[in-house]
Every structure is written in structure tokens, then in C-alpha cells.
Length: 94
Ligand SMILES: [Zn+2]
Image (cartoon, rainbow, N blue to C red; front, side):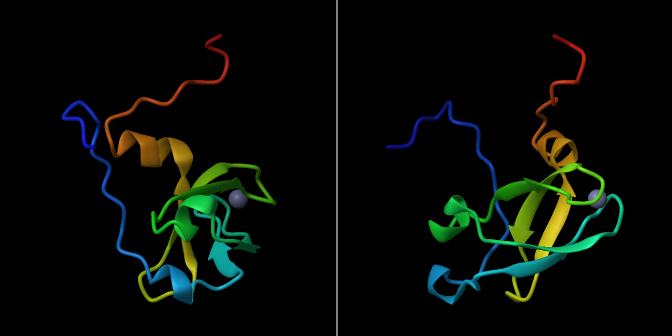
């Protein structure tokens, strides 16, 4: 059931769930460190959204599988939230 009050978040198109690889290479969009990530539980359900921390600089990243199914695209999680008009909580606010 769809509520009209549910914020609509569009995710990039992703490959068929059956075609997902066990690991994808990705490059941290902040420091450029190359590493690997596994598809998230959401990706396995067909929603192209995951997250993880960079092993090098520790930035919390939003992860999406590229439409060509060869790699993961990363961007800082805060930046991803702002693209939906959501202001991330700042460290030190509490
Ligand atoms: Zn990094």
C-alpha cells in the first residue's frame, strides 16, 4: 500500500538481482582509495542502495551498483541525503 505522505526516493536503475556479483570494486569518491563491497540486503531485494565506510579515510559512503554491473559508484552519504533535500545530522550537534 502506498501512502501519499511517503517521501519518494528514486534509485538508479540496477542490474537484475539474479545477475549481482558477490563483490564489486569501487573507488572512494573522497580519497580515491580502491576497495571492494558486497551488494547490500536492499540491492538483493532490487533496491539500488547500500552504504559503507571507506577503509582508508573512514568516510561514510552511499553505494549504488552501476547500471553496467561492473562496479559500485560511491558518494558521501551526507551528499546523497542532501540530493533528496534531507539535511544530515552534524557531528557534535547532540
Ligand atoms: Zn576514502
